Length: 214
Image (cartoon, rainbow, N blue to C red; front, side, top):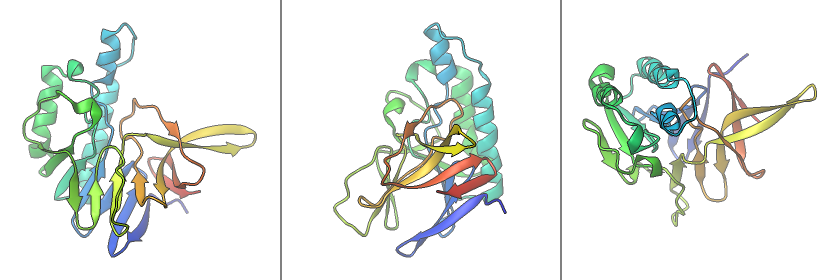
């Protein structure tokens, strides 16, 4: 039987990792995503690399689907909402600023390195965000308190699985057990990935409808 989500606890906090590349916190009704990199195709086009523009439309559609399904009180984006301040045109800016009203939920942005200089309305912006015993950040932080958990993005974790001689690459959630850090997969379609450390605990995203512990 295929699983579209995997649940686990940190201390007394329940998390639900979703095959749609998100995390849902049922107690606080917060939905977490990261590394969307809106405007990436346009940025590459400006630099002479031809890419199609449909990735952003697909990203918006997927955001709408998971918000409709989980009905969160807050959508929290853990950095790199945009790819660059130079790739934000008026149309993209309006779509993002209209999202809170369209989704009927509050949207917060924990700033990522690609968001520097990107000015946007209707989103609350943080450098680091805390909820209960969880620290939300874009890049991992070294926590002194071992009873605090860090959820972050930035690294776009992926892993490799072998099947009948083929080596397949999948996005994944990856947990550094020693540092109490959970790395989220990049939400954006037009994003690459970096292989995880072998010591990390991993959950592979096989498809938008299946997540698998490996």
